Image: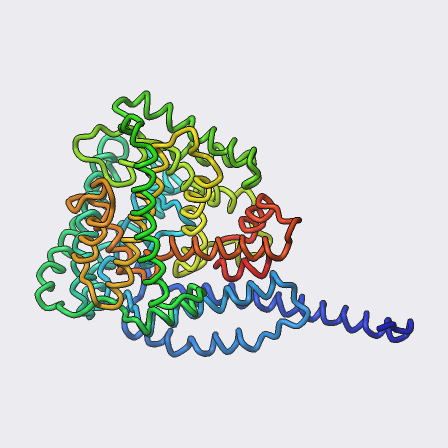
Length: 528
């Protein structure tokens, strides 16, 4: 259709007004997001968060008003990126709704009241959700700097009151959540005791506060143990709630039943592929774990070099200067074979490459600081682990994708590790699904995962299987985020190939996914 100059001017003016209106509306969204984050956080008094039933009831009552304010924002003239941000904020509000309707961690999950995190997660925020006010030791250098002492003391001194109030709040009857909380607080006590020992010779003035927090944790754990006989109910949220969470919070199209089928398929594929890989490699010498620190360290450092060089030369993604130091800073240390190593250490000591590929996590964390997103909404970690399918899906997806791209052609025995890793992720994901359907207990999920992980690398008497299954029981959908996220990544690549045809470029696709930020892949796809 051809327009006269007058008509064209009217259309141009209308478009300009729409864009201006959209820009104004987007500013309203950003302002609402800032207010929303303040509302979502609990009230704090001397470092103690208020998770009382009355406070939570007030939040739940107010939540529809926040959702109505969001729905009232009309995205006329908005860019696709801005409309994506609207969906992100809606998912966060759905996350709080899910917590109030189904999960209720403040009343059902003793681990929600943890005091301290000893180490940094490789994800944008902690895996799983804990209450506000946790002391994150990894953020501090030791001896503790003077400007950090007040914050540390506040968090430590809040621990006794935090745990006293937790006893009143915890009315849930889920037995496995209760047992998981007992295990978590055993670790909390160990972490605090180790911290007191560490500070004794350098900053003894902090030791009484650490010891008081540890004493409160001991009393709380003893209370949990005493209450356990009275907490005999189911711990899962149920299939209907799981589906609601998948659809409205994670923003994935797979139902609970879909995810069961997907994980069963991947578990069978992993075992069958491992068998054929072993047939291919049967004339080769066995793959042995490193027995010396010097060998392990050299392999780990070389794996960083080789991985990034391969990704760059094969056009997988653009290698930027911040990526190399981000990976090297997280290389683990050598561990002898006795006591037995945990699962991922068994893999890492045989070949460092698979875990360096999975360490895309650290590259993406570095990107958040080195290349912060233009959107203030995507610049910060999303609440309720909404980033899980995106973060874990890419980290795990790349393990197998780099395998197919040829990264392991010169190390054929290491190809077997890829299938072992896949089997373990599929098995533990089924544990997540079955625990939340209340078909398996925590013990049954742990045993199933161990039995379905090849080579005996995952031990029932180790920490990994219990920590992971406890996390998945506490945070529905985290255990399945690896394989579901990988499936969504495959779908994005396939859709882009169909759309661009001969113009398709894998490097630009991966770069665009990473630039989109840590948001659900279902929201990344239309942006590409």
